[in-house]
Image (cartoon, rainbow, N blue to C red; front, side, top):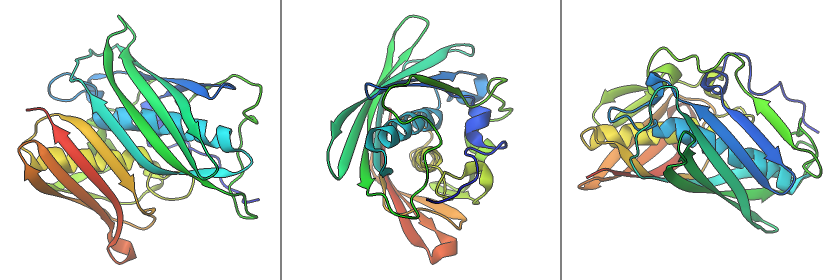
Length: 267
């Protein structure tokens, strides 16, 4: 068993995002993101990075409950949005489910909608590698996943951002297509590396910057290694109109390639 500090810590992006999550014993879960002006892009659509964090938290919790007593690590995350607008005060609901549970791989899917009228905002999926339990495996602090419905609120007072999400996590666009993020406890995951949703946010931010600022609607994140040192640098290569590939490296770990992100923007 590995002893770890409570996660997330009191000062953390997930606390400030104030996500709410309900997990159920039938391998399904629902999450809610309460929208503020700082969680919207320029066109009024929900910030893709915030949605990626919602999907990542839902999928991560589902995967761990589903494979207990083993553990799970994220292999990839995909999101496709329709560009539908929301307004401050709206709530985004994500309904997630396990669609495949194998010996080495687990896959979840998620539907995103606007709760005010049920309008579909997009959908996504996540793939996880199942890690057999070892003596140093992290210990799950929640229920056993077998018989309980649990509801968790990450932030008691609602979203706390006073600036756009990328700014809040400390990401800086240093030139078109290049984003730098220092490693801090504010963005760490339970493994002590940069949280998967924050990684997706960096990829989307770099891709959007390289592609002239158009909203990102399609995102595919391939997680290759954990970024534990930082700063993390995301660099976008434009493939053509509305398409870019972003590579993230951990500069404090010898420029180790940690993530490859494919980004598609609105036409």
